[in-house]
Image 1 (cartoon, rainbow, N blue to C red):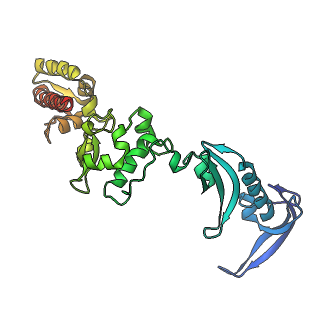
Image 2 (image 1 turned 60 degrees about the vertical axis):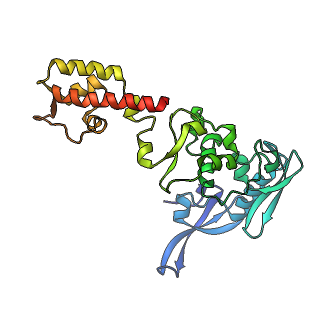
Image 3 (image 1 turned 180 degrees about the vertical axis):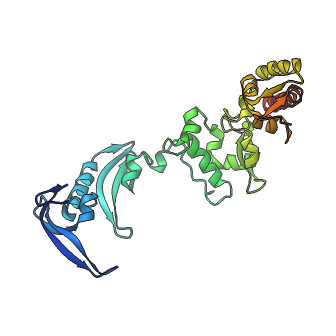
Amino acid sequence: MINIGDKFGQWTVLESIVVYHELPNKRWRSHHSCVCSCGFIKNVSNGDLTSGKSTRCKDCYMKSRIKGFEEMIGRRFGKWVVLEKVFIEEKKRWRYRCSCDCGSEYILPMASLKLGISTRCLECGDHATIHNQSGHPLYDIWASMKARCLNPNYKNFKDYGGRGISICDRWLDINNFIEDMHPRPTLKHTVERINNSGNYEPLNCKWATYKEQCANRRYNNFNTLKIDQISSAIEIFKQSPDRLFKLLEIKKLCGFGVNTLKYWGNTKKIEMYHNPYSCKGQDLVVVLSNIVSNLNNRNASISE
């Protein structure tokens, strides 16, 4: 319950009133006459006060915004120095006129400066170039590749640039990237790094479908399985070919479960016995041997 004299932000409640609303459903609603710290009086609804939606008058809100704008003037963001605030009539937004160290001037939004999206003009970029390739079919792929590796504000930067993955100097120029990777086989193909921990460079990249790339993820079981551990498990299963090994035993010995056995062992069916599920040792030997063969073949292809 709201009482006279209660404070909500800069509002102070003076009295309770009832206001009739024509729209949308024509009914009486409870409001409170409130005075702002600046002296402005306004009727504010109960919901806006209790939810914190309204905490001050519009003039006080705009003054706080203008104060934030004034604090930006004179500040440095990379090579930018903020000169003045400018109101863009077409967009109904405030922007900043900034000067680069080279003397160029641009108008930029606050977010671009504070988030580090823009730190210098195009002429001062380390690899600034006019390529005229923004309409090329491979441009979006090239731009996304650069963002993943070079932009700390990009959503997936931690999985690429954050892990030390970079782009070779040759591919920083989109013309070289197009020369090495064009044409794209189909729209379903994207750039895949053969060595998942390697950089984006001609000898480590190829076109691959999403399904093919799923098998090359760094957290995929195929890349983390240890051949030595599998070989030890095979020897144990060979000693007891007719014994039924439960799922927990298999996972402990191999480091992965039955679903992984089915997928990487190139078989859709492994015969199960009893409940809880269990597998015969002789069946496990066959499947694990297939996995070892797959691992060896894949390691050989990567090394090539």
